[in-house]
Length: 102
Image (tube, rainbow, N blue to C red; front, top):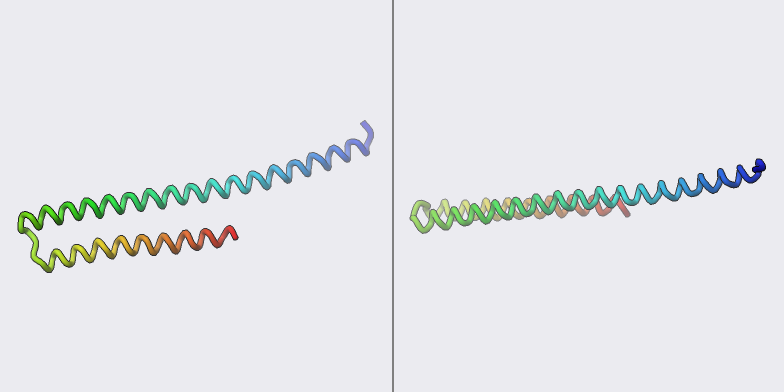
């Protein structure tokens, strides 16, 4: 092969390498985003199950007459606050992560 053929081949290989690198970076970014979403969904499900468990416990305590009305109100407020804080904080996190890609 002549020097010009080798030079052309080298340019083609560099171009192909650049294209593959760009594709790889995009795929890795998507993988990171999906991983974050999965973690967020798992946290949401855990919190939701925790809230459901707590509500069942409260219902059982109410039926048994173990709780005063102030305790009932306080426990409901705590459950609602924890859920709202989780939703708001995760919305802010996902909003920041979405901004990073645009």
